[in-house]
Length: 241
Image (cartoon, rainbow, N blue to C red; front, side, top):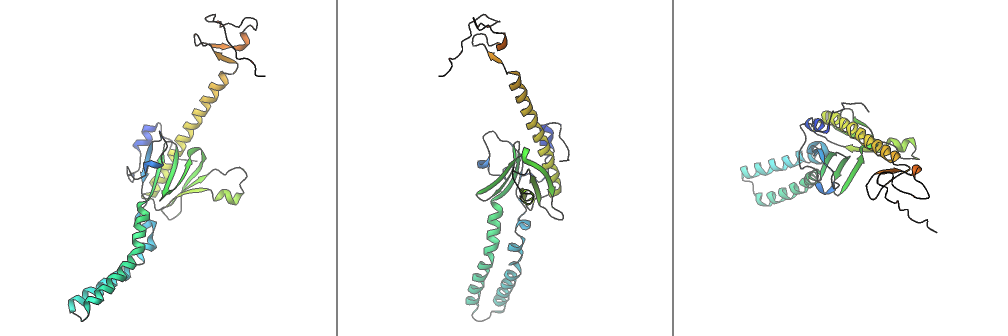
């Protein structure tokens, strides 16, 4: 996965896109010590274009009819205005739903994973599962291609994605997300390598409960096990029967 690799987390934080909107992502979906580095809402019109655009000509037409009727003082205008208001309300239902859905949608990059919130449902993926970050051609959709799970068929593997739709400033956000995924994936591998090195260095070693020194068990006398540093006796748990 190509892309700019920040020198530090502070460098990554400073290079956040201008579309970052602090507080956009619901904090209740975050883990204990998880830190948000980028968060934003999708663009309203781009998220549900049909629900918002399709009713508008009819709403404007009905409102125009009502205004003309009032201006001309047509008979029965009160009843006509009531009917117009009723149909306008019906046409506004999909628009209100689009606004409600938009208000409950948000995206975030944290120091641990990629997240997308859609109402009460959340999609997330740790950075070590993000194989690639791509911007869908001719759109504001960012696709996070995830590592296939064991046993997946090729067709299933291609569908294992996490999608951000209608992203404001999508090209810049896609590049930033790719940098964040590279940075945190590398940091995760470094931490895992450090842990593996520590674990391997502890093989055949125990800690003296008196002085805290490391003891190589291959140097301990089985007749009189003592710490070579402080000469304290080494106690070993009995073998379970």
